[in-house]
Image (tube, rainbow, N blue to C red; front, side, top):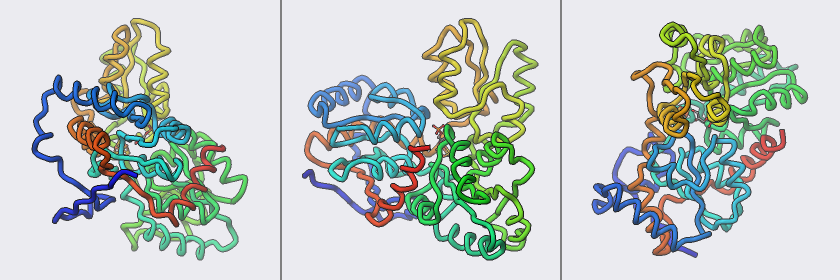
Length: 377
Ligand code: 13P
Ligand code: SF4
């Protein structure tokens, strides 16, 4: 069994989910791309089938070029579940690596090249906070069965909470099926943490007139009884990368490019989704461009790296970022830089597991129930 390094740093780790945060050693900080590519290549040759690199669609070019598989969070978790490799290097964010650790076997290790890759939206619904809200909501409406659904973008303890309360996990590609699953078993849904995905999904399943928001940061502003009257209760979380898109970005792109079509992620605001031609997960966005005819113009409403990949992968299509230069990259995804990848891979060649993500056993078992329910819907 390889040795695990956990060098604690004297720093405020409150932003980060894991405390085995290690700084990149100086020798790895200024590698040039050619040298780094060669070093990654030789580490991978040496490691062979012992390592599988998974890359989320939002990772930068220098990362996705080394990935064995690139995809959305649903496809990546399925791929992790099927993997035989003893080490899975997950180039994504903490909640994705946690999910991979939950669904892989105990003798497989999941490594996240940078432990600083924490999705802010996942931090907007902490299990303790949700537990308190749950007590208020269930007390306000004791005759209704509420089924909690948490978006994949959440931590393992919240996934475990959902399993315990009869709920499940979903991703942007199966949220509608998770709603259907939940409403076959209960009367209403508590959707966490992304209010926009929750609202967009409520529209998709015909519950748009029965939604209410739950703002955990405004104790005065919420009325549990009013909220409990709705069939879909939306936790007030959001992604800042996707909230940036506005309806006038869609109208603006259509004015400037009359033939343009628009595809957006369901983390965008409702009015943006309504104005778009296609809405879907990052895989749906990729498929939309793959299936487009040469010469078509598509504006992409999601994280900027994916728009850049699509422009590079499909030069026959005119790919535009939906809000031009104002489109953001995801600061959490950006933490995984290729120097970290080199360091983690070279560590493995020396028998050292750096930045292993290990979910606590009691959380793992329950969170797995919620993830398995998702994989079955
Ligand atoms: P996907 O599940 O569509 O890949 O999205 C994950 C995500 O974090 C979007 O912001
Ligand atoms: Fe989180 Fe938004 Fe980044 Fe996705 S794009 S990982 S939701 S911060």
